[in-house]
Image: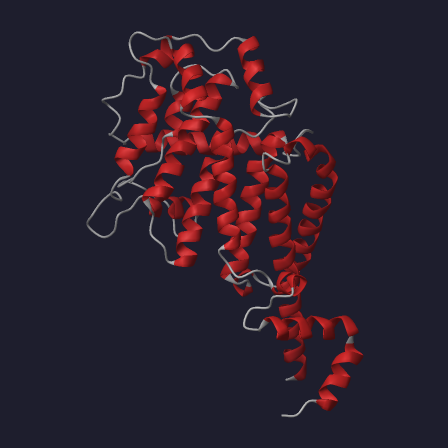
Length: 352
């Protein structure tokens, strides 16, 4: 029995450490990616890299010691949140992001295949005229470079080696679904607006910064809706994502998604009198500002992070422990700072 108790205590300590690392590293990434701090991001790169390395190293040890089913749902969610935050904020990095080319290629291939499979039996966009995307030439290298400099400080942003918004859509969808599952929430109209805008921004980026042509990337970005023929398996992110757009037993697609999705798709399609390039430039300037969208997304991620009770060690750092009064929290922290001797002396004078 004593040995089993020791194991339980050690797990609690290790979980508390990992929870602290996940939470504070996510907080740091969000802080550095905020528009107010992006100018100073270069100075923060080393600190970010160090914190991420600490998480990675501790996570390896944690997984060697404990099975996956021992990990709490909140800890799993915080790990997912950190992974997405790292992926999304990498677009602001001044230096090259350490994403192996083969990993990025495999990711894109998987996303494209799933989108093609979905679109092969999805019927909902027939009323949209996408021909301008087929016949219009791609943005010139000069225009692409202009937008690359405008949208991100990284010298490799917009190149095949950089992470694009299109690369991150599935992770955003899975993160949102995981949060709904954790909190037993339903999809809201506000979230649907953010998700549809995310898809539109991802498609827009492909044309003005990455120089793609044709409808493939536009269709891939918008390949998210209720899929009655989905073959997603239990326990996969694909099933999590599919659940977002299901309105419940016998109701089909969640109410409101079709209209919101169509609204953002329509924003990207030029009227007959305007060329595609001119239209997309206007849309970016007036309706789909990347700076505005990025701030919205960072605010959303901050909301997810702070919706949960902070890790115990963060509470101790802040002197505000859940379930304790301010005075009790301060006393507890003071006793911790005294070390084991402080607790020993306190226990001698305490009355039960």
